[in-house]
Image (cartoon, rainbow, N blue to C red; front, side, top):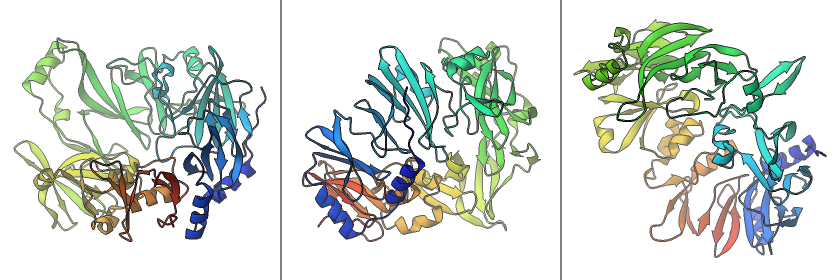
Amino acid sequence: MKRIIITLFALSVAFMASSASLTKEQTEALNDKIKDYDYVGVFSENRALVTKDNKSGFINKSGEVVIPLQFENVKREGKFRNGLWCDESVGVIDSMGNRVVPEGKVIRIVRLPMCYDPAVRIHSWWVNEFSYFKPVDIIQIETEPGKKVTYCFEYGKLLFTMDNDWPVVNVRTGEVLSITKKGEKEYLGEEQVKKQGFQSLDDYNRYNYCAGRALRECLVMKKDGKCGVVDMNFNVVCPFIIESTDIIEDYIDGTILSKKCVIDDSGLGEQVLPLTMTIYRNKRILVDKLYKEVEVYGKYLFFDGYSPSSTYISMLNEHGIQGIPESAKQKKLYTLEGKEVNPMIIPVGQNRLRLIVKDERSSWMYEDAKGNAIIKEPLYLKDRQFFGKRIIEVESEESEREISHICIDVVTGDTAWIPEYHPIFDYLNAGILKISELSKYRTLPLSQYLPLSKYDVTTSPKDNELNVKFMNKEVDGNKTYMIKNVETGVEKEFKEISSFSDELLRVKYNDRWYFLNDRGEGIK
């Protein structure tokens, strides 16, 4: 099979061109050139799909056609990523329009993580999902019934192919599981992993959370009925000693957290009864039989001890489990190295959270280093957001009434009130917004105005900043959107909007497509 690999030169040209911001005059000139197209897609890597009379091709940010309008029946939602574009109408092409793979007709093409299809178990192999992903693309193409080839690209370079198989990929980093042989990597697919004695990574049931679960830097795998953890070069990080019904909860800087569980198959149906948590490090148990839930704050693991209800104890007794270990009932605070420290104080930047126990309910006072209250009311810990593990969400009685969370930056100690489930959480967790910067957005009610889109790791940092700078709200009863630049206060109404990509915002106005630049200019 002939394989045409994208050149680094073509990639560099595309990326350099896409990074330049357009002036008002350049944006207006671009809009003048696209006025006669039936459809115009968003820009990505200096390429935007355009369609006229059912023929599709690509233009650059100058409005010039760089890939001729020659493709029919294009799905339209696809865009260039890592120098590649794929569609069943043609297969995979590079940014110059060269066909990369495959030869011949394409029956079906699936690209991760852009699609979801339970029939091919894509939900188990998502990649590029988080902020620190490697630019890995998994593309499976069916050229004739029952014959599939999976292609793995990195930065547009073809790494390997697999016939009728999926590679094993860490969903949070995009790394592909491999074995190093004589200085070269051999990438592993699901079938190859099974041949080495590991159970099916996709053989989930209602309570087996362990098999094939992905951590940030490693993969949970199953062998001989027990679970363990391997890194992406197939080195064992945690021995295969964990029961398959237990949950390997997380892997944090070399520390593994595992929940001990038991299955309740009573008349209520199958369910997991978490019991205790174990901390593993350097292939050994550091701490055992802690409370079943843990919160991670900076470099600390906090276990909030508990007293189970009589109903819970009765359910455990039915499984031959007598009582809960005393260690699980006590509040504990550990460093990631397993060293126990004072559980009454959690350092937060230069400040601290001080534990208060009253009527068996834990609350916290947020204080400066001298013990002066920064927030006057007692706080209740809610959650720790994933990106960077940097934001603590807490509630007070007042914030509960306001249906808001109080967010605390564990590095700086800054605080902000944010409505529950607001999309700005995504931008905070990704580091695009800082809590200390939220004051400039306070001129807008956060519950009313929303970023143009949810945070998207496949979009550039500059584009995500613009997606926050330009906020939108849907006008009730009408299919129109109001976009407001939060710095200038200028507000405009459009029929359709997308989100910033390549520092351009695609909108629909008076039944035709336009682009706005990073200052909201472009429509005369």
